[in-house]
Image 1 (cartoon, one colour):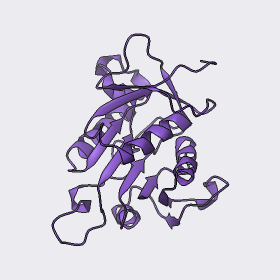
Image 2 (tube, one colour):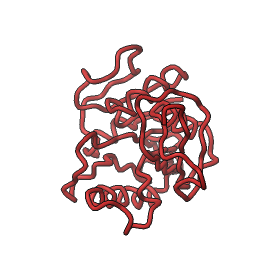
Image 3 (tube, one colour):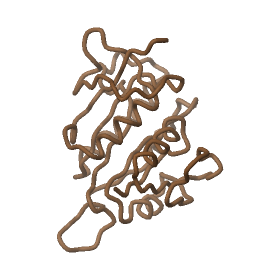
Image 4 (cartoon, one colour):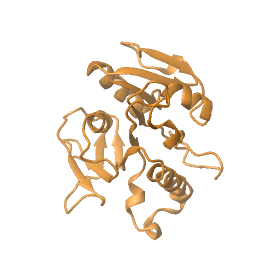
Length: 215
């Protein structure tokens, strides 16, 4: 399957890229600095550009069967309210429409947002409210895009925990009683790639988590 990954140089994106290549995906990445790509097998196509640039996003989506959005803020939790930290905004113009040639073959779009979207807005910490509202705008765009979006809303992403492939998935809520408040970066990447192959969670908001030994 041909896919694009946005955010491939981030902490979750680097892991997800490695898993995608291991699983046989043909991957295109859009990056500003290719030197930050992880060591090991290289993506099939590396494009230089910014995920906030519609033309660059369109070029990356050309001929793809799906895409992953795994962009993050790193340690910068701020947003200016104008530039989405969540990045690309694929829309129905990228979907298949009759016989007209279009960039997308099968518009499937799992996207990592934030678990705070599943909270009562009043409970979101003050310092995270601007960022959460930015993610909320991204959620609205994805829901109105006409694409097969999966809105993955993970809790704390633990970069030091392993890949297990065994995690709890909750639809429409931030877990159930006793649910973990963490997911490893490899397990999150594993779930995102799983969503490209399945349609069980299309159009849904999902929370993915797991208890790890060191948690």
